[in-house]
Image (cartoon, rainbow, N blue to C red; front, top):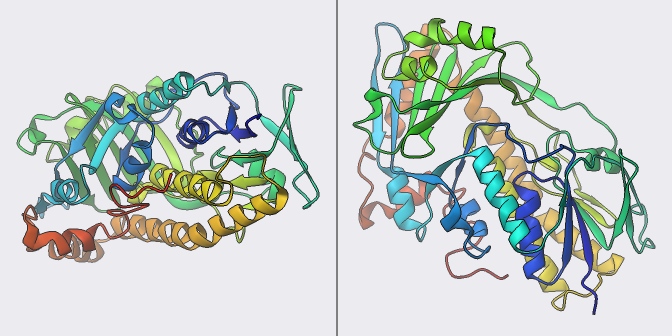
Length: 423
């Protein structure tokens, strides 16, 4: 029996993870990526329990990830004349204890992507770089038995179905629903990778938030020696390219006003090995993620600003539910009919669109709440941060389990509880 072929567009986080999990379920996935090789762009991401649970379904992968488990959150005010620590909590350590060995873990993005690509190779999932999707055919009717994908280099392939994981600027999405402009959120981020500042040494592995007038800085460890950081500001639109600034702009930024931030923030800026600047975008909510034999997941379906750290983690949730539903409706992994795929994709949308739309909206609110201007607004924001963590400094005991569940309600038991995976 020939395994059903699946075309996956995109080799970011979702593409190779989906490819391996589909392969383990008896499908024959192939990944096409528009860039010419594995991406070295981007700084880092924070893996959280919902994403880590899905990654644990790939044998041996988590043990190979060069990541740093975070145990503490610290919050500081940068307001002139009011510089102070606002709050500190061991909530990430409590989340790890509650979530069955899954917590918050920082990792360099290029290293994470390479680990996923390596896993795909180990499991026999082919990846073809330099293949940009330009047209998707056979998705416009229940009668279509195959999907045909055409690429900019002239190559054509076909499969039983296709999954578009090709990100914010998804050509798969454009092929299904037409082109539309990504929506600039009004915020930019400038970030880098730096040695751990001396001021952070007493914190241990932590995520640090600093709040200023019209600015927010977040920083977290990605290994034993380095911290990834990003400064969010309300500025004119900057394209989302993730490419490093040129040398002159990097030098100017390292010597600019942010180089004097207190609490170790300035040291992060001055010592960065590379600095990247990009705009933050999302897209209008889609009412459907599929047409015929083609479905979108991850940023292709629901791109989000990064303020909840849920972009990659939600893509991994999509993968779990997509494969779970394929197993539910097609347990023998036979070539799926159009009707079967319609049932799978529709159920996926019913389950996921409400959740992902809520988190995209919540991320926007969090970003706008962090970046406020004017002394009065900043003082009110800082006081709200302080009050929100009051009495939650030490959550590492069973008596505080409900507090931890409330804090991390969106992620601590998703997309399945420990030991209950349906795939």
